[in-house]
Image (cartoon, rainbow, N blue to C red):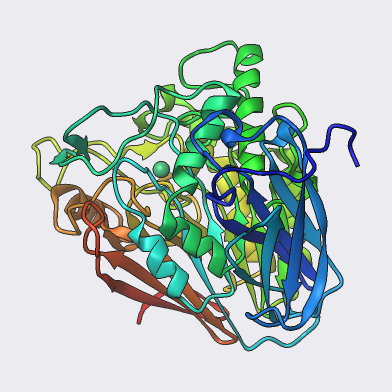
Length: 511
Ligand SMILES: [Fe+2]
């Protein structure tokens, strides 16, 4: 035990204000997470800067009548009194319940589950993909609905927090519309470790988000706003010298690690975190969780919407060489019925041209987002070639970031002169939990334009929600879930569209 251990801690308030979480499941265990923060918005969450011992318990039933594992973990002030427990030695493919204790205080109970044994035959698997949860722009109603879904895991594609300043009192604007104030960030744009910690504490105080974490294990990944808008490896978007930006990135990574159910292998080393990783759900699914921020070449053309010039086809990577090799080797060796590539930004070559007249549906020059895969066409070509060679018709890409649902097919070199136009894979891009406020739906000028200009795009709407996938051996079903409003409580859930992919036959079919 450390010499400075705080024995018999007293908090004066519930220390479990940020809830509990589990993640990175294996066939014999998972990571359990909590953070002690009796006054979450204060420095160190209102804790004394001394280590504290926290008890943890795992049971085979919700009433904790059959304890199967227990122990003690230290919550260190260096890591904001977060607790990361890697539990092992449990049975595969079954639910477990967990809780924490410190002093006289007890946490909420969380439910999680282990993966099936690696070779086991698995008939069915369900998961949710979600992210982009701007706290000021909407309530986390969609997380409350996710907490009720009978799923095996959640893939979080990123934008867990937003780094931006408090928008101030009163109405705010999102996507050209004005909404009454929903809720506000605390403080200005975040730069310091304390700033990032306070921002996570604010977001994690949300009861709907806590309910989702307590209900199901998460595979976490980050995108840009966990650090700074549209950052790319050593570069931010403001032209900060890389050696200075590295300090901000290191603080952002530390705070991210502190607040997520991640394994010790992800603990930051300076400004780097090892985040890309794989998981196997028996013989049904291999999941590859990518990191398309830390290793990417800087965005082209000033990171704007731009036509595809020769530079977009040059030897550049959004993944970095080592991660590309890891993914292609993994896909080549994969023997599961399905493969999931779970990542952050759009793979579709979505032409987002502006029409000459507002609202018109013809004309203009095709333009693409340089922050997404179209800015990295050589990497995109290598990825689709690998899928076509090794995993015909059994790879599904799940992404996010664009604050609206997009479902479409992936064609090799779409947008390039002489492209052959063969469907190789499909993509479900999950809409945001809250970013963009209520949204306009699917019949505004932008929606009409992208549908007209992109025949491989099968559906899009900018309502808030999440993606629900239901996988059986012969079919992969994706439901685009939407909530009707997030700027007021009580948003109702519905399914905007359903698509089915048949195993071995690439392409989306209307369900
Ligand atoms: Fe976002």
